[in-house]
Amino acid sequence: MDARGGGLEQALRRWALALAERHDVTIVSHRAAGAPPVGPTPHVRVAAIAETAALGDALARLRPDVVSLHNRPQWARRSPAGATATVTLHNYPPAWKLGRARPRLTGAVSAVSHALAGATASRLDLPAGAVAVTPPSIDAAFAEERTWEPRRVVLSPNRLLRKKGVHELLAVAARPEFGDVDFAFVDLISPWTSPTAEHRALRAAIRAVGNAVLLPPAADARALAELYTTSAVVVCPVQEEEGLGLVALEAQACGVPLVTTDLGGLREATFAPNQCVPPHDPGALAAAIAAALRRRWGEAPRRRGEAPRRRVLARYTPEAAGAAFEAWLVAAAEG
Image (cartoon, rainbow, N blue to C red):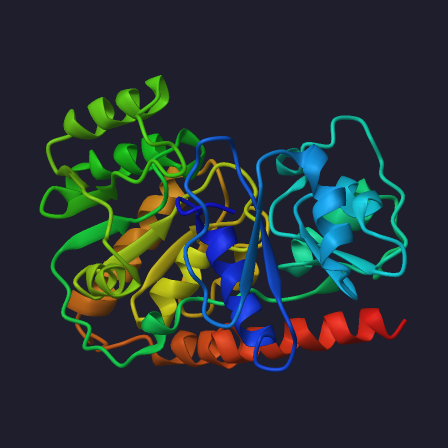
């Protein structure tokens, strides 16, 4: 973890805060050399290491009862004797940096969605059903009451990467029927601090489409929530499997119509009447966006997506997700 951390690390911090109400919690900030450390987290200690080789010694000094690892099942062997090692997966196996290795795990394993739990069991040679589901949380700012006052904007607040479907959404924007709609992309390149060749190419592609705009990243969760509620539709047209989809949950918590593609856990993060469409189908993506726009400007416009909002707040607030994660860790520690 470092100060530039993305959705995974922020979800981990919210879990840590929930656990700290009843347990002693230390975050091990494992970061690249020269990266800024994770910022202060109330009631949670931070121990910083600069390289993976130092993890075992750091854990031995801490003498933990439970070690909670994230996206790195291969680090379980670095846990000290007597500690319960647990592993939580947030992304699909290519993000775990395993190579061809199949680490042997004796502790509990969880994933952030049912879809990812199935993929995790397959990759780690675990029995079906052996991987628990521990829902992550969204920032509490997205649960605050807000009025949906949209402009004719389709918003893609995802990181600026090809795999997030930038080109596919630009192809929809260029269709004649969307000529009076702006398609907004957020220039979010975190965790990079300088744009890569991919970022520069995507920026150029956005500028080449007349009704596409590039927005600066939101300063914080409240600013992002305001961006959601001034948009008519939020779109997650990803081209690779998502562990779950925090953007999808955030938008629905704000009551904003959503369109996603059916890859990984996004289907279970998308609640009716919002649509999850087949991937690599531009016609289906365009039709779903048009239908979502009609929810605001059609013959019988709706003011707000209350049903999806209730579904998100029941499971994915810091309190609800924190309680579920704590219960899983306690059960693992008790064997």
